[in-house]
Length: 315
Image 1 (tube, rainbow, N blue to C red):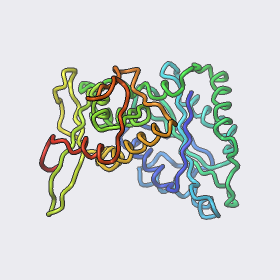
Image 2 (image 1 turned 90 degrees about the vertical axis):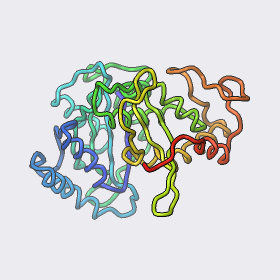
Image 3 (image 1 turned 180 degrees about the vertical axis):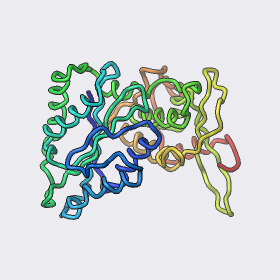
């Protein structure tokens, strides 16, 4: 089982993310702790009740910049748990992490091949004090191993690969929900691979039946650059209309890619990370370089890659 703990400043953002999936019938509320009783009504009432349950905690908050917890617990794809077992899993995990007396709501997500749960809570107690999170990563790992044994879950050697495996497979138009498939693959490629140019990025995506293109145009006299994504078949032929990056997330647009490529390049130069290019495709070959050995790149090279003529016109 893999646990991911995220912190944020917006309770509304964490709740609306999960509620939208409930509205789309790809998630359900299965349990809660210290919540207002009725969390099964219409979406507006559910949102209101959920926000109210956290109100006193967040109003009492003194100095914590990111008081909202958004945790996901991800068993192996081979594990089979009932809703009741998932609720127990969430409860015991929160207890082990020191959040057992906090208000929290548990959602089960069924939008990918592996059922998993999301927990929205707060790391601030009723007095406005931040709950101790020292050695949180180590404690979370320990809790996961203990719960794997208690619930008979599969113990996975490569936790990262297990978490991303449901996403890192070729997109298939026949499976429907094209936008969600594309979104899942983009997120996994961002997390797994250290591409250092738009050429590498688009080549990676092509391994998963996704084509990335830059489009340029002008709106009310102002020029713009954008990225669109299209699902393809195994021969590279588009099978759907292009999807604007803004419909998936800002980080997958022109500026987001620019920042990510710059970050990957700096990390490589600082030798903090080695470029991840294996596992799903052969190493990329670039003109003038040995296979798999990256050359020098800077902002100018990035813009050259992004600005290669591809498509003109509106998004």
